[in-house]
Every structure is written in C-alpha cells, then in structure tokens.
Amino acid sequence: MSSAIAISKFFYLRKNLYNMAEMVLDQVLKLGDSLECDNYKLAEDIVSNDDSIDELEKENDNLSQNAILEAIASRNVMGMGNVSEDIIVKKDPLRFALSCIRITRNIERLGDQVVNVAEVFRNGNVRKKLFKDNEVMCKILSRVITLAGIAVESLVEEKDRFMGSVNTIEQELNGLCNTAFHQFVANPDMSKKEFADIYRMILSMERIGDYAVNIAEELVRLNTGQDIRHMDLNN
Image (cartoon, helix red, strand yellow):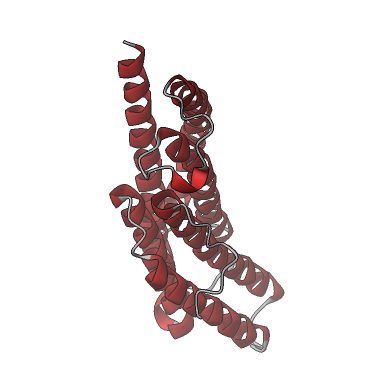
C-alpha cells in the first residue's frame, strides 16, 4: 500500500509540474498577442493569472519535499542509501523530486518575468505597433515565445535533446536585446517614460530566455546526471 501511495504522489507531482509549465507557456502566448495587438485587456489578464501559477508553485514545492522524504526512505529500505548519485538511474524518484524543486522555481520565475512585461506594457507609455513595426522588437518577442515553447515541450517529453537549440536561440536573444537598448537609447524622439518602460520590458524578456536555459540544463541533469551549468558548450 505504501508503495502505491508513493507512486501516486510522484504521478501527481509530475502532473502538477506539467500543468504549471503549460500555464506559463499560455501566459507567454497571451503576452505575444497582447504586445502585437496592443491589447491592454489581455495584459491585465496575464497579471491576474499569476496568482494561480503561484499557488501551483507552492503546491509543487510541498509535494517535492514530501516526495524527497519518501524517496530517501524507500532507497534506504532497498539498501540504496549509500549508492553514489553518479550511478543513479534516470527514473530514480529522488533525482526526479530534487529536479522538480529546481524546475518549479525556474518556471515560476519565468512566469514572473512575463507578468513584469505585461505590467509595464499596460502603463500605456510604449508607442503603438512597436512589436509590429520595429524589426528588432518583433524578433525579441519571437525568440521569447520560441524559448518558452521549447522549454515546456522538452519538460513534458522529459528530453534533453533541445539543449543546443535553446543555447543558440538564447544567445541570439541576448544580442537582440543589446541591439534594441542601443537603438532606443539613441532615439531623440523617445520620452524618458517610454524608454524606461521599454528598457524594463527588454530586461524581463532577456530573463525569460535565461530561465528557459535553466530548465533545459536541469533536464540534462535529470536525464544524464551531468551538471552542465558552468560548462562551455561551444567547445
């Protein structure tokens, strides 16, 4: 019976994690529609939806902690308490529960950055059609949507094969954000309020890319046991 309960809890944790990821992806897609169509009502909806994501984050955190305790107990009963982490199989419940904590944190922070963009956008200081008429901002938004989509897809599929694509797109996003900053800071027709809001939006969208990379890196660790966070993947 205890084994069945443990399996059920891990299944529920995985389901909750996927639900949270898909909710955040939906927020990103809504953000794209909001910015492209100058839809302030949609931006308001994005901000309002954040509470539901925060509740899932708290629930997942509690579930993960309970799952870790159960996994440790199960491993000790099976005589696995002294097994090196380097040889733990991919489906080991302890590894999954530990990864869930890190992935949940990154999903929640990614969602926070989406909300930050929406909150700034609804101020109404950013000129109309910016995300349609300005090529750099269009590309930034496109890369943000792509990165969030890849992160969620790779999470749901529990794959690490997207790591190279995530790194490439994230590096491109960083370059685009830098280009946009220099473009707007040199624009004499832009008010201080508009520049400040655009700059905040650019920073938040760049951070979305960072969290997408964090999720992809954690999936590599979950699948292979290898921590690549501080490795130079270009060599």
